[in-house]
Amino acid sequence: MINDFRFRVAFRVGLLATSVGLVMFMINRPNMVFAAGLTIFIIIFQLIELYRFTSQTNRKLTRFLESVKYSDFISGFANDNKLGKSFRELNTAFNEVMEAFRKARSEKEESWQYLNTIVQQVRTGIISFDADGEVQLMNANAKKFIGTAQLKNINELANQNPSLFESLMQAEPGKSALYKVGNEFLLTIQATELRIRGNTVKVLTLQNIQTELQKQELEAWQNLTRVLRHEIMNSITPISSLTSTLREILDQDMVKKEHNYELKTEGAEDLREGLTTIENRSKGLIQFIDAYREYTSLPQPKIKIIKLKDLLERALVLMRPEIKKTSIQLNMTCESEYITLEVDEEMIGQVLINLIKNAMEALHQTENGKIEVIGKYNGTAITIEVIDNGPGIIPEAIQRIFVPFFTTKKTGSGIGLALSRQIMQMHNGTLSVKSELDVRTVFTMRF
Image (tube, rainbow, N blue to C red):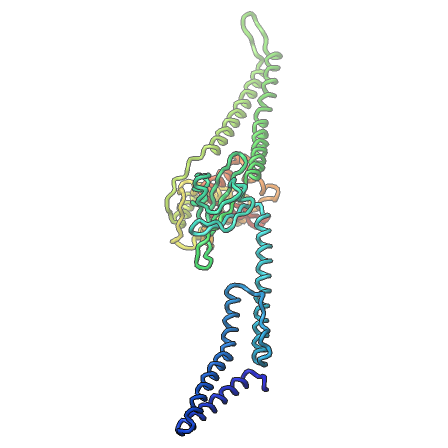
């Protein structure tokens, strides 16, 4: 007990109280004035010693808090364990807290190194900077795309590469922009803003889509060339064959009489039939070329704000006369009359009509055919769904129905869906399809 910190404090306080009592006793006796003065000095010494003794705890707390403040977790607390159990317990608690801080900092540094290694290895370029433009993070791919090995402030790019700097600064959260760097890189730039410790940090991601785009472009051209070859050969082959046949007819059935030529009746009929066939195939080829020209020369959309409900109702009015000629049921539903779109009304209306017509054609042999047009806002995007309960689309065809000039119909140019998707892309939207055979098919326009 004698080594206990609290006992020591109580013992010193008791001595101090005794000394004060002695002074009060001696100060009223003239023969003990000197002794009283000496005792007062003893009291002052006791007060100083008691303050020094008790202030050790404050100094210990101060040193602990400063260690936390300056992240100094190396030093320990054990020098004054001899002062009693209370100090030993306090030192043990401090050392445990310091060990927890050391472990947390070590784990934090390991996590940072792990994440930094991943960030440096990803193929996407990443740059982050604060409101003053100070670059906080830039991985290896970002340096390669930008063309610099070191960048302390994003504003340095204003002199090095003004156009890239402008593209980076104009990048808005939730949107993407394209920037071409020579012939090697075609970058998509996306931005995100974060709030960290009261400061705004902007994070930019740069992704090179040049290689992928070239692959997709090559695949698109191959698909287009395959369809073009198929369509052109379907017209050219019979024309070439008929031309050869007609020449044989002329050689065999045409007779020269004096200064004139006469053609047998049977040969004349064959000649007329062959020329009619050539004419029809030529017209078909011209229509195909016109369809190609229409696909490759779409005008720029004239954007304006319209209500989704109005768009759906106009399409319904336009399609009602054709629907009445069939037994198909067409229903339109709009989630709210206040949903608006910023689109070219004519172009988007044409896409919607194309999808309804396709659904009607799919239902021509279906009993109790039904088409539903549903407009809604799902929290992230505005969508229009055109749903039919027809036979559906086979998996082999569903991957190619948006390829220009590909069609599963006996008649048609095969550019309706390709044009519709192109129009949606011009409005920064998408057109997709899902189909269950003999259940339903859903085309979704997403804005």
